[in-house]
Length: 351
Image (cartoon, rainbow, N blue to C red; front, side, top):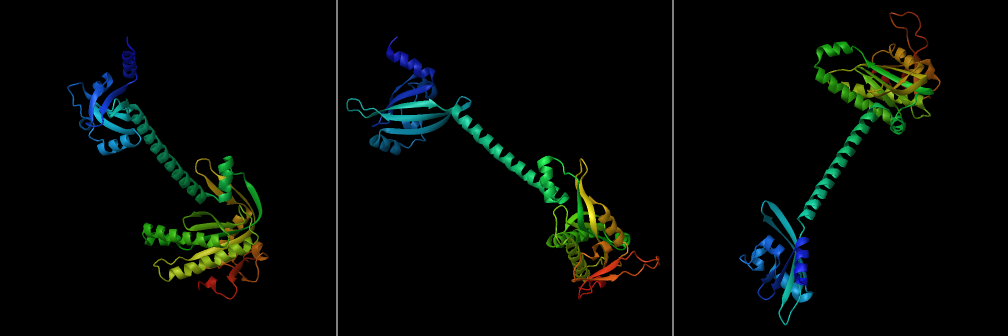
């Protein structure tokens, strides 16, 4: 077997088509078996531009005159599959003839792999984006259920250790005649009103260092000093309570439902922790919560009742007036007070 025959078999084995191109006429003079298998034998057209209409003859001619190298790709349908070949033209003049060696390599599989890699990359990028978005949604949901420091502890350790907070202040609020409001108003209107009101309360509380613990229908419960310490926690809840009433008084002037709130404030120790296994909620409970809740029941509508435990923690910006006994309770109200901002009449519902 001759060297030429061996080279031909090698080129055929590795799937390389070889042809000689006349650069003057752009006709193919020689084609190996692989080339003819792909593009047709002697009966097929010998014109380069007919075989590969996507080629730019001017660019090919310029490249051959300049550096003698030119590369291109061509795709065509072969039987039932689409085939892509990489074409390398190399000038190889012979006895004054301008000819070039054309080497065609089947890169269909490479293109398929590149397409698969691109698709996989797009899928990974899309999934990464979706995972990031879902993570942000979960984080946002958990931050609505617990303070950020508790969330960070839960994210790091999987649990939130119960903690005793020795000195904090608690604010509790509910609305008078809530059952009657439910009877005479559309539920959608009530829910919309409560969403607006509690959202405003959250903004006010955040401004003064209060953390909303939970809402339960007509009740709202916030605390200052949990889980992050607040130096003037009593001032925080008092300021927030005064502005809650001020907000409601203004709102009642322009809305059909007149929400009449009563508030209770107290200071003391509490326990804070995440409660629940499947439905997580950060809860705060203890003596200060109980005192604030009981104190709230003694408050008139659109007024703030303060427990004696918070009295000595407030400064001169607030006025404490002994709370008169309830009509049904002739005995003293355990030393409770009505709280107002100095120089205002907030407890009377005025803005």
